[in-house]
Image (cartoon, rainbow, N blue to C red; front, top):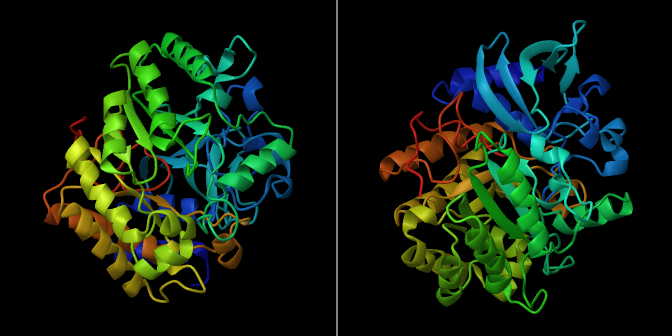
Length: 439
């Protein structure tokens, strides 16, 4: 292919059942986008909601390598519409890559557009600064630092533990930069709270609830690094669970409560349920046994792949299969030097995992791998996985859901091209446009 445009158009022609919006979205997520100075935000002092770095960097460079984008943050997300491909409304999480063939810039009239190979391919919308971001907590901390919102305001992302106790080369997941992201923000002098105080979280949610008059925020996710010992004297289930308990007591029924944690024993999962959590995300990361052992050494050492999967199935007995939604990192299957060398092999492996879980009524979801440069896999694979892999995964994902009669999972907003808000992969954009049955 002579250009990225030719590659994208070839894939749209070869896979016509995958929405064209999803093809562009996956390419932006896997490879990032550059920002002209005219498209950057004025951080928390402007009219555009800035990128919050809510857990990982999701960038193709460290902060010092991003230039102006490190000083004036890009938007949290962008919306693509129109252009020569007549794109329907598509929400895309921003992953900065100054070397990307995609660039967001303003034209002569000041209107933002997305350019590929120098040609304007879509109009770009940016999220307005929400009113609740304009207010601070009583201690001066910003709402964006304590309780940022993503997915165009749908989801409050509560990373209450900003580091991971799987630490070092022998334990850290090989694609994950949570610990580095913590270090780079501290080194840059940015506020980046390691362990968030439950009262701060409640105060931030109070501000969101007061000023989110349209009730756009519908769900919250409690998450952070894995806990192998304790944090503040609490084990993992109790640590993340006590935030849910406090939130549900203060704001009963206001939001769908979700928690991303390790695959824990059934008794611990029951504690999540008792604390008021409605959806459990025990992420399985990558399906292939050999790759799980290589890429998730801490999880293999402390739990093990087979036990991890058993615990996921056990948790369905607590939450119900529909409310257990494990994530995987789509693309690491093809990461050198250990990954699959052909798209066929990678899709076959991942589909095997999808069929395993979906046959039990459990619907996984996925995040499109961003090869962050401070991680071993990102360093070795700066281009990520081939775009064809991501497009064929969308096709296989929807087919497998159809095979088992499953519908879009709860807690992700509406499915369908032009309607989805889930921003870190296109799985919701690629499902039928119908209202999901929320939990």
